Image 1 (tube, helix red, strand yellow):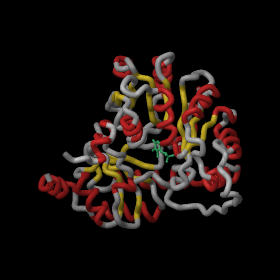
Image 2: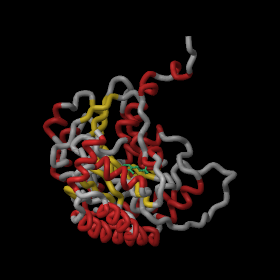
Image 3: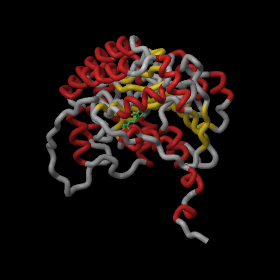
Image 4: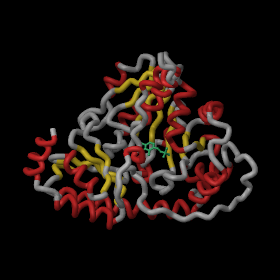
Length: 367
Ligand SMILES: *Cc1c(COP(=O)(O)O)cnc(C)c1O
């Protein structure tokens, strides 16, 4: 009899497929357009050196700066190790393992499912409609036992915003039954669409935010949950005692200063300009069949032969994200908006790719 550690592990953990993060998927090259990061880093100087002391659980400078940036009160803000930790804290606070369920709408961000699975919480999925909007009647029919609903707007990977009318209906459907978490990881690219002003109206709503995308700090690991003071108090019960290290808090506070926020807005402007150029250039590539309008710092496009295009770029050191296995995204690739030079490199590679007919032949052979 084998006494493997695996056998001692919880059954759901044994079965668990870890989140296939861009870093885990690997790749080799110089054009990294697979993780929706900002393409250029900003230098920061640490302003503290008291590393002998534990950090504050909720560093005040970070909380206050984020509250004023987001237009809420300080007691409506929780800071965590990335938005990913916020996703997890909600499950830990609201879902009874083996009893309650979380609901989300694929194709969407992968961590909702992975986090639920880790805690032994049922994953209920209701696919987005063909237009990538919420299927409200199907959600309503599947609400039994659901404690937590994740929606993502702009949605990753499809890029579209969810209809505010639908979101309002969802919040009304869920009232008294489930928490609705609105993932706004990309909201800086479409700031007019934020649901933060609704927080006062819907105490069962939370908004997830991050410094990983428009703030260009994916390596920092810093995210936020916005909600009612009651909600924040509850989440503070389950968060780790020191979720942010001292250097992280230091840099986050700087990034959220008025200068930091202005720099972020400048970055967003550049990305939006480059996105418009990329949409046009992609549309003109023979191997691209459709480019979907996106509101984030990324785009989804459909190819005549996604696997072949993906591999051809991969071999040239241009790393995109293959989304073709996701529901309703067959033959779709996701591309992060890079620098203009990076985007031009992608376009050159796509132009050089065998024309659409040849690509179809290639994909038939590959099957
Ligand atoms: C990137 C991303 C996150 C994770 O943000 P972190 O703060 O880096 O953990 C959450 N949700 C969506 C939709 C994302 O794309």
